[in-house]
Amino acid sequence: MTLSPLLCPVSFAELPGWVEDDHRGAFAAFRRSAFRFPEKPYRTGSLGVDGMAFADAYDAARAVAEPNRSDARAFFEHFFVPMRVGDATGAPGLVTGFYEPEATASPVRTRDFTVPLLSRPADLVDIDDANRPAEMDLYLAFARAKSDGPVEYFDRGEIERGALAGRNLEIAWLADKVDAFFIHVQGAARLHMRDGRLIRVTYAAKSGQRFTGPGRVLVDLGEISLEKVTMQSIRAWFRAHPDRVDEILWRNRSYIFFREAEVDDPSLGPVAAAKVPLTPGRSIAVDRLLHTFGTPFHIDAPSLTAFDGRPFRRLMIAQDTGSAIIGEARGDLFAGSGDAAGEIAGVVRNEADFYALVPRALIGGG
Image (cartoon, rainbow, N blue to C red):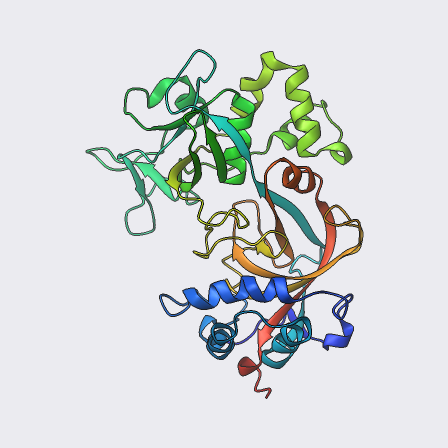
């Protein structure tokens, strides 16, 4: 596979903020992917960045635990060539933010804790071209197993009205339906259980339908103007209109199922699609059909200052994906865990330039 013409070589000197960045955080994130590589190399995306071409860089990363600042920068300059990422539509690049929510939860249903987070049902099956009925929506990657063949799974409204009741799928119970919804959106959460445990829930599967964000619904209904849509403004609207929560949330037919996981290192996020823990401020979700997990991306988003009060110009590592992350120059920045991270992630929606760091082995550079 050859590299896409949407990847245009540039020099490191042309990367805004490259010299000022502290690359040690990006190196630590990259090194986590390096330890995953021997188990199963990442699939090559359609832009042609071969997952196997990272082998030398991964070998070197595993051999160095904690480089100093200058050595971390030199590592990336030695093994990679920066390439500006174009967008096939000609649109400017875009970054948004995501985080790992924290919430108080109960292991059993109580008067106050009535909203469940569910594990994957036994009748939910993966769907691909081999077992998809001819009449089924090509988007659906999950379906409900029936004796006469798979059918579309129950959607959010049906599930919340009781379609899966009585199956003992409840992992934990929350007190607020909106909190539960945003845990679905983020795909993971840390739960402070009322019995004293700290647990993490992470994505296990979904009902399969397309995601419809409440922000878009509220804009279409004239409830919030597009330029004012943030996670914070959406939450504020729900607080002001508690009688309309179901009306809006059920417009998003997609429903997420979870599995329980340990919190091994509180400083890191959940294990994501690239099978490594996310690093706050250094992991990015990308379109996995186009890009290859493990790829470093230098992101230049000068209008984004929510992370540290300065223009966002830093190296990130592709370690997650998402159904809303579609396109060559599109990314979701992991802000961390808890309310403070949520305040950052909730306001990120900024134009950005993307520079993929491509292994020199792919272009013959030494």
